[in-house]
Image (cartoon, rainbow, N blue to C red):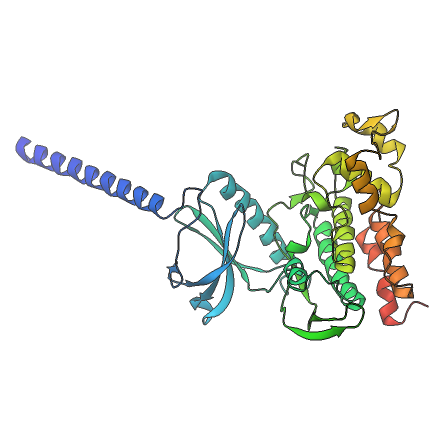
Length: 378
């Protein structure tokens, strides 16, 4: 048996050990804080290695959620991957966990990566940051458009991209998911290599992407049918009328967004260039006609209406802006060729006001615009 003196000595040693551990833990926490910027971004340099695996090469982009960097994945023979590094803030960590659950569902249902959705390779925690690695893709369809001075994509490439986008989002809908943030920035080319081609109409050279294969990215806002549906979703310019009117939303809101995206590919500019709800609704009416009475009567946003009609004065500065900026959809046709008319017929069906009447993507994929390239449509 130990004597009293020995027990006291052992107890003192135990307390010293606890104090040492607590001090070390405090030092580690301080070290973590020193790794982050004031707004929660991880501080890093080119050449840094995360998890003894991911060697940072450079920064690909930055958003409110965090940053995306290009890395060499030394566990995959040094292959290049994209690593999304989420801010070290609780709300972004929680959002990242939801995105991971969606990406895992996509991987589970599409192990061969046939449905044009970006492939998650791995995820891990790094000093409070959730990190997700993906296959490395190229420029977004928006960034390519911007680099090309906003010259529209050729109709043949629009058809190919539209088919892939519809296929990808239809796959999500089959999984009881709504993407909720479809926009050109979230559609990336697998490769954005291009050729320079002379544009006779514009009398200038333009970039023509060599391969119009795309992937759908950013599932941070994707929502399962059974989950809570936020009142406001989608980036402004691609927001469906039922969202603005707070009528509730589901899969059809993605279809509206796709219609807006395809118009932008075709014209080179945004269909609804506004930041105000009332003005947005006025633009819709100028382009697609009057908002249905059923939607107005059910809307929680009665402040936008008066006597069952949109409260809008065309004689104001805003009214003149909308009148000059917008025109009926068919008047945006750049050619009277058959495929252009078929394309606009598809757009009209995607930009149908009533969500219940809006074309489903399974039907859209069988639209004559897609069949015409196969020689199945006369």
